Image (cartoon, rainbow, N blue to C red; front, side):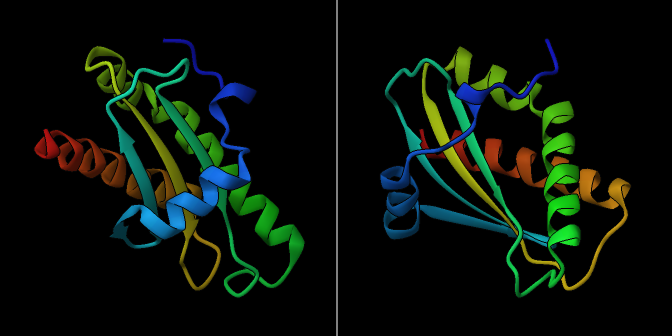
Length: 129
């Protein structure tokens, strides 16, 4: 697959984000909290995501932006399995990924833990069927 992170893959809708926090389910795997809404409807993009690094966790804007860029890059390189699963099963998911670590982490750790939580998400959604 092509390793891109297009605008259409980003979650921008404020109403959908509010819905995730009110009705969504969650997975926790340090240093991430993943909130999601699973839908059996077919969408143009089966997976949409937004990444958040709270000011409480990283005080400096430089640190927050760096962490957010690193998490997006790790997602971009490891999203293939997730997208294939949702394309093949003709369903969609909306994800809100929140960084919950206390301090800056090394990129390799961020990527490793992101792979783990994405695999757990696929497993959890597959059990819902």
